[in-house]
Length: 64
Image 1 (cartoon, rainbow, N blue to C red):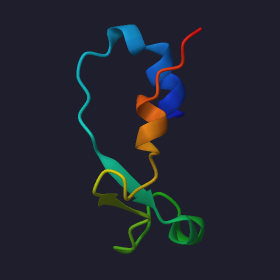
Image 2: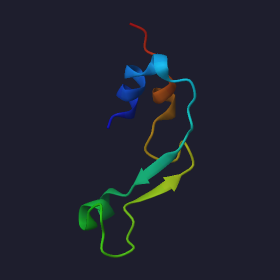
Image 3: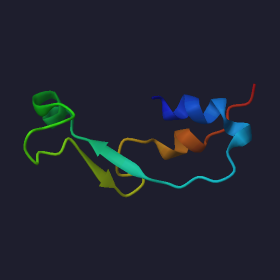
């Protein structure tokens, strides 16, 4: 899912935003998949701005 496009598509319906960010560990994901048999985690929560989401891009309003 593209969070930037989703925000643009629903901008008139969004009244509140709760920030949460996630780091995707691509090397682990490629090796074990989304349901690893061991506790190897392919993602982890991060402080907003330290993960995958570009927050200035997310909040930038594109007119037109």
